[in-house]
Each structure stands twice: as structure tokens, then as C-alpha cells.
Length: 213
Image 1 (tube, rainbow, N blue to C red):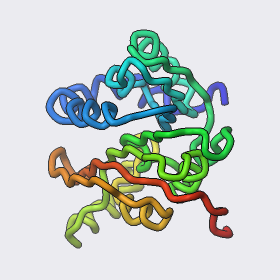
Image 2 (tube, rainbow, N blue to C red):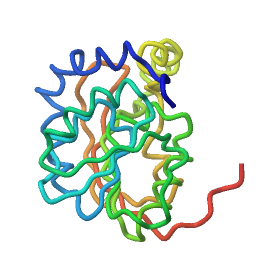
Image 3 (cartoon, helix red, strand yellow):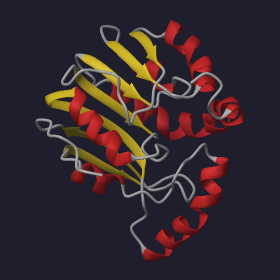
Image 4 (tube, rainbow, N blue to C red):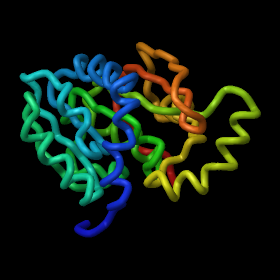
């Protein structure tokens, strides 16, 4: 996949996100990563913001398709206490055997993948039965007025935001994929259209073949 991706978005991501990371995201990332156990798969690792929060004893496989993101994530991997290795691939087609991970991590990524249900099916497949998905995502608003705004702005937002869809019903898709949320926190901060947020832990049932089509 060399050469693919969003070079400008990758270059600006850490700079633009820094204020929100200090005020909000960093504490939630730290809380989630502290819950990771066993062998960990992080999808859409981006510039590697989560790496600083993984406990020392963990082995983390960081999956990211964007060459430009990977280049910026590499120094953070070297500085991390955990052992972090990279795989360049898309989350819709995970290059791993069934049931080989204990924990999967998705933070601010399910908004931008091409097929979120396919990604969640793949995460179910590579997680052991009962394995955990740690997630932190912005989701579709609850009120019709803000939903309409998110729908209207999505084409523009996708263009400037590296494929981000502000209007995705991520919790609905988690349920459709068979994940069961064991903890869930609703968070109201940040500018529209990328609010509200949800943070939680979901458990994976035994894997079954994906739905046709």
C-alpha cells in the first residue's frame, strides 16, 4: 500500500488534536488502555497516540493502512513501554488467524473505515470467544436536528477529515455484529459534528461466518 493515504491529514492530526487530547481524550485513552490484557490488536492506529498509555507488559500489534500515519507512529512505538509492532493492512481484511487476540482496540477509527460492519465481523473473528473490544468513538447524535446536521455535513467532513463520517450509528453496528457492551459511558464534549462520544468495553461471542453480501 505504499504511497496510499492522506499525507496532509496525517501531518496535521497531532497538531490539531492536541488541545482535545490534553483536555479530554488523553484521560479516556489512559483509562481504556489500562484495561487491555493478553495479546492486543489495535486497528487504525493512526499516528500512534494510544501507544504511550499501554502497560509495559503488553504486546501490541498496531494495524494501519496509511503509509503517512505509519511514518509518524514509528517514533511513538519506539518510545512506548509496551512492545509495539506494525502491520500495514485494512481492518476489513485482517491478516490473522481466528481467535488469536485477547483484546482489540478501536479509538476514533470506526467513523472512517469503509465498511464498519465488515470490520466488526473481522474483529469478532480474530478475538477469542469472550475477548474484549475497547472502544472510544464519536457517534450519531440523539436528536433529529443534530442528526440532520451530521447527515448534511458528512460529504464535506469526509473530504477534510480523512474519510471520517460524523453520522455513524456505531453502537447500533456493535450490537448487529454481536458484541455485548459490558461497560458504556456517554460523553458530551467537543464540537459538532463529531459529538457525542461513547467509551466502553464490549465482549465478543464465538465467531460465526459473516452475513452474506
